[in-house]
Image 1 (cartoon, rainbow, N blue to C red):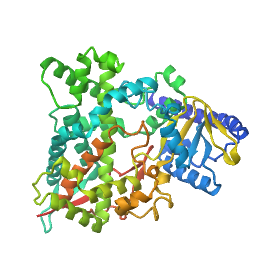
Image 2 (cartoon, one colour; image 1 turned 180 degrees about the vertical axis):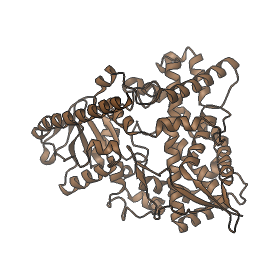
Image 3 (tube, rainbow, N blue to C red; image 1 turned 120 degrees about the horizontal axis):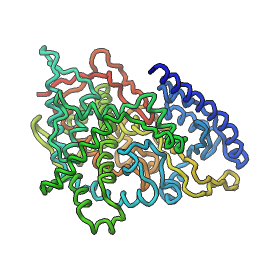
Image 4 (tube, rainbow, N blue to C red; image 1 turned 90 degrees about the horizontal axis):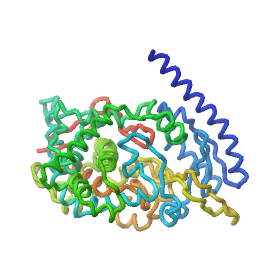
Length: 508
């Protein structure tokens, strides 16, 4: 029976791609008549689904082609839908910031209950209301209050690494499956700082990390379902298409629901995100102030957004950073010297103020995010017709419903903004070099009102882990680890393969 189901699924996908190609040709005539520069699709949708190609690969090609033709933007048909690719930072600034009211929405990721009512899944005024409500959660003051959770989790991470010893010879070392360890750390931070849960994600019997992996390690079938949700939302709704396995979805729904219920019934106050949601749900006057009608169906997706934004993304950024340090001994040594001044002994702690004073750590992490962005493309949906400048002064209209894409990775690798872009060089982000560069050329967390709301949270969380790791260990490639570092690419950006191991040698 399952063979029949698989065959029908593959046949459906093939038909969708076939008709998308036919439809694409018809739609392209409209854009040609409007005078838009037309780009040829360089990587097929099927290649993206199967992992043979990646959106960042195609975007780099589009970007180079637009540069060659001296065009600021162009139209490409992806799976039958027109997407405008931008190569001009002034136009990008207008669309993503100045004229943001024309581009408030993003493409749907999934229609599952954990996603559709969360901040990332909301559009229009409901999104604005929720963004306004959530923004105070991520102020410097609020993150300072959560900082002890970051430190405790970083201590747990270094302790976990030390349990992986495989050699007692000189020097003793620990070979660590990198991504797995960093996922445990990011989940430990989320469950403690956001949910107020006393959960040990480093324990061998932990269930939370494996459940999260079932959602965020995106299979080929999940990629296809996401594409259908984005390209054919009415069909997805008609079919009641669910991108994710219901078991992990129900697991997290139950976990967060239980946390909210326990907090409400106990009356115990916590210094975490769950408390903010509980206060909002209990404060009936808050409904009028925020224009949000609170219920479990609204609150739970906001809490899950912490996991959606901070689990695999933070773990991957940390994995990339450690991998780079392992293959750049000189950079690792300079970072160690800075961290050692702030933490003279391996068992020392560091304050919120102290972590933000580590300038080289900030430069290093910025270069990690430039060189290997976790999100290689930003997109927005045009919510009302918008006029673009055209070559020769003839304006062009972006029709309502059109997707506009900003190729993050291509800008990050543009010689005019980052000379010798494939060289890893943290000094690009010293004060002098940053002052010379267009502010919008670097966008690892997006730009404009719909940029990542948790950027401060993510940066502090990542810096704390790196400081503790570098202070306690020398990092080197393990046997069989590709050198120089070799990154994979998934549906949205760069990632470290789950097979990569690094050698962690304890410092005295």
